[in-house]
Length: 358
Ligand code: PHE
Image (cartoon, rainbow, N blue to C red; front, side):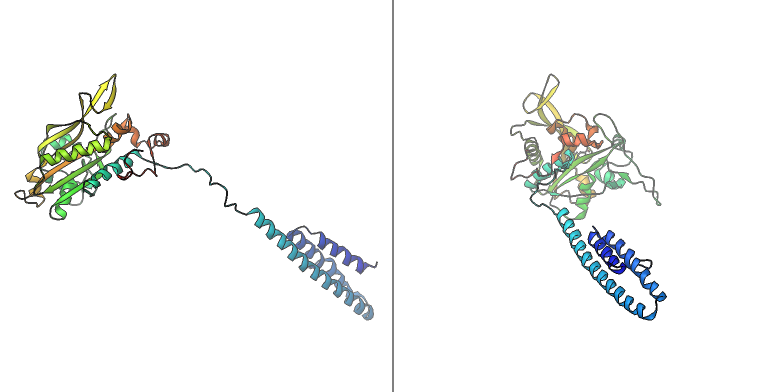
């Protein structure tokens, strides 16, 4: 075999032996690149005499054609093999079970608000909202708490820096300002509840600077103290899922209701353990009363025509009592282990159709 035939054979077997596209490219450069073996042979043609050059030129061109054809064929082979390999490696088995993912939990505050809203919705209430940053008028004055009223000191208010006009906004100390905003927004009747955040300068086992309340407001021409008592008794019995839960209303004072009362629910405290229901002991659960005529008047509602009641209850307190959560501060420490323990599955959406219990 002469030199040209030997070269063709070596190159063809190198092409056949290339195991992937990168190796094949190396062979191509080695043969046909600027310094490739075949290229060098072609360059050396100039040194031959004319007859020999013609003959050798024809042979070398034939080798070049063969090599080019072989390269293209091998490239196609290797490309198809690479594609098949990828298809096999990246195949998705849709019959595999899903990977277990950590399921998020509903915070007890959200759960209890949802439960209470569901109960009130069944009684015909709608949900209203108001701003966390309030003005003095809605948080105090319109609720019959004038400047210098001692109740203002009791509220331990967070104040914001004064604005350009000297007005000091504040973080609402209760959800009661939304009573005023509801009445300002349109004429009676009203039957609303207001779940929301409230703020007071306070921090210990039973107080956090931010906490939640649900306000209620019912105004029409006929609602009286009997409706207040019936509505709130139904509420706590549905929420705590105790049909015969005793309730009692104790006279109290709020500037914005007259008369005012605090509602207690029955419980027993044996060996330091609190149990809701019968038992002869009492536990305070919410504040309420008939809306003060002055409050109606300040909100543009005619107190000679309209009357009704309002109440405010603490969401954290309800959650602690119903679900046995001992320390209020843990609600807001964002400890995921706590949330996994006391939280609720997102699939347990409270509804009156399925019952409220888990
Ligand atoms: N706003 C009162 C509080 O925060 C609760 C309340 C609301 C009392 C409505 C009476 C009527 O303590």
